[in-house]
Image 1 (cartoon, rainbow, N blue to C red):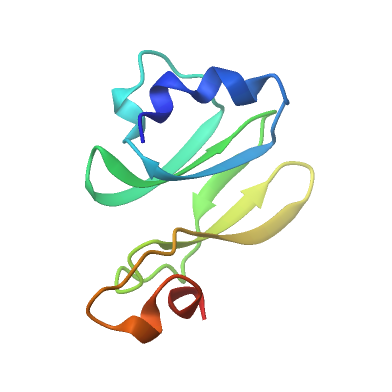
Image 2 (image 1 turned 30 degrees about the vertical axis):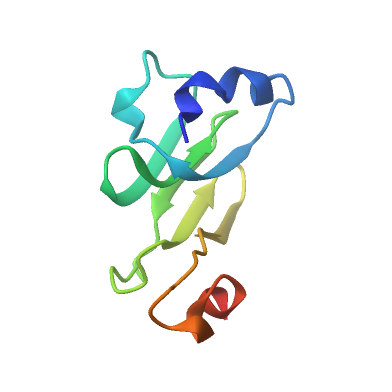
Length: 105
């Protein structure tokens, strides 16, 4: 949490993409340190954020389904196009089979 206070640490690594679970909504940052972003969540203080750098465009893939709360299919485009899936798996206390890796599976 509080990624807005920590992001400077990782920027020195010159990332192309960052996938950040437990991330506040991008409008909570003091300034835009990324090229493009996607964010999903019900609480603007804690969701799944994806940030791109180096002129890489990211868009939500048309297969996105809100039923899979924190699984975001993403189209990534620069000189080439690729698809990735950003996932924030969680501890599902109601259904132990869906805890962490079970959630991903």
